[in-house]
Length: 308
Image (cartoon, rainbow, N blue to C red):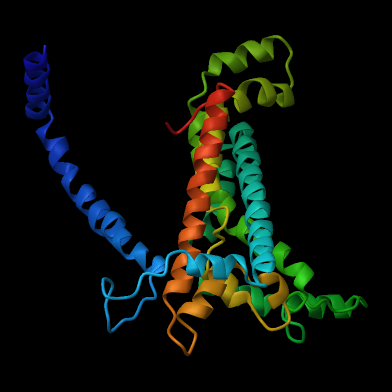
């Protein structure tokens, strides 16, 4: 039996040798850039010194984890991170689905392509340019939005300095930028739906709303669940660049998240401190892994699609 399986494996390799060769470069990339750096995770458990090196730095156990959990900054950092992450996660899932469903029912092909191109184009705007646009358009004194409000007799709004508005500004600018791009996978899934389902529903007198509810949404349900599970891995990671560029002294109470805090105490700090931010980063990764496992287990138990 084992000999037969061994011969079958050799036959498969000989038959698909070109595919196995193509796997070599991706595997090398994953090993070099994903697995090898895991060796540096031990910095979180050592009082790391650049001159002493990794192995000669004293082992301190969970010292820096305890320091983070006992920090007065912890409630604010975790609260801001969760608020932005969860808000952005659900809003970022809902609007691409709505856009994909609307485009799926548009009859005019030319108009459909124009809408898809217009909504997809903002994805190519870099983070720096996006933040520059936000700062220019919403500036207190010279921004076009506040100038229009002033001419209409309304009071000016401090979009960039009000901590209460920071989360909405961050999330909704991201929705505008990424909705068209994120809708592509839903559009592709909807295009594979058997048209006979819709034909039968139309014959039975079903409206577009009921066709969406009973045909389209069930057909893309597995895609929604898989993307949701993968997105939960970034529960404690909101990204760094955009938030850091949008930060100022006035909105810092709402904009300081774990990613920006790690940068400030690890790289921007005048005193080199690598162990503490590494411990925080490892904590983020562990929470993300736990959320993926939890969401995947829950999806399997209720009988839905799962990653494994």
